[in-house]
Length: 143
Image (cartoon, rainbow, N blue to C red; front, side):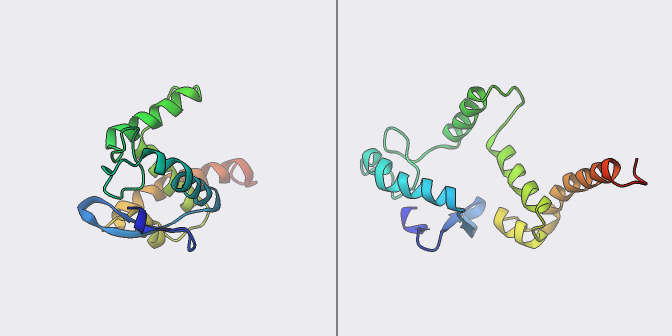
């Protein structure tokens, strides 16, 4: 909801599956984009049917899961990519990049809203594969 976006703090309160609540930080580019959207775009879309939801479709209603999927697919096509990409692919990439950048597993768990750490540990496999590749490419004994 719009009331859950704190532009000054750069944080958004998000409700996930099972109405689980979590705080999601917005980086500078995302914060700027959300701020511009809320100021210039959303007021044009809002017809009183959105229930205060942040992102609205062209009819002024909340975006659906399928609309988000279609937006991701359209951007994939515009970029000329052929692999399958979904909103979950972006979520997976987000977690992987955090871990590869040195983020703590528990912090990633919280950002993703996972109840169980074992669900988040799936993403560590990708990092291990990357580490093995880096070792093979750059360590004198790895070649």
